[in-house]
Length: 376
Image 1 (cartoon, helix red, strand yellow):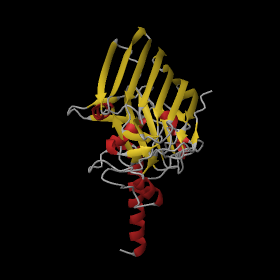
Image 2 (cartoon, helix red, strand yellow):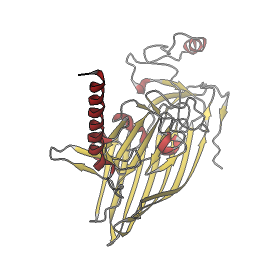
Image 3 (cartoon, one colour):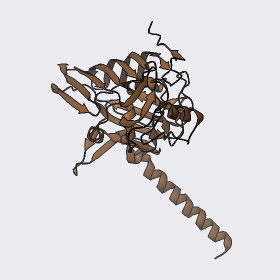
Image 4 (tube, one colour):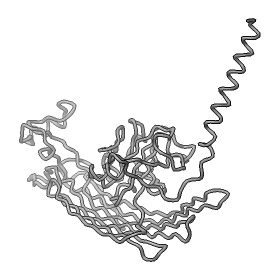
């Protein structure tokens, strides 16, 4: 066989292979548009089959060509995830470092994220809750209520989700109102440091084509750090937390191809955050070795009192409290409709957020430098 004949046969074989591949992909490309409702289903072996919307379309996670971690409702309930920061329990490579205030939290994926604690900085990891972008990570850390699933996308996502997603994306989808039956439940949890958490939700239909869902929660926890203040070194607890959240939804389906979902939520946090642990148990023990400041504290008699470095035995100094008062609320409306020629998906939202913080900037028992919270 001549070289020319061999080349001709190779080209023909390649053309046949291309036609076969294109024919196999055609049914996939002709799939209909995304449904208006996306759910997490249970398989026969009691595992979860998760459908995600990471590509702005509803696809199975196995068929989504993105580095993604999706957590379904069952795994979320088992892990006790209630707020965004709790996602680190179920999502690898996700972190929420926090520094001197409740507003200085930034999300990081694979260690990549916005550096700095200024609340004016925009995050490199975008957070979306029911499709609504939270421009600051601090406005996404309230109680999320009944979560249906969470999707964490690793790597730049600007093509589909716009700017401020250069390091990745966190998308939280909450459960919709139940159109079929009425149900209600409540729970109470006792936590460490004399903390307790209450939550309740109710959902059900209000007509043949409409339903509602209400959720509310309250949490309070004592401080976990021993704080000494004033010349007499008066002892008190520091880093206490208290807050509440409310979320209401209304779902209307005027036809089989159209749904309208309205959501209103509000939250309040009154925390003490964030004292610095100056002394560790078992002696001076400050990280980084003996410093001049540490030596002075040691001479004054500010010693550690235990041999085990447990969190409740850490000691800090502050003549003033560190109040962090965060208030937020928002509204959103989502419309999904199959127009025949294509799928209409529209989300309109408004959000407001305020942070009033104060601190003892000297981090000593002397009344030297402090800031008062501006709550006006």
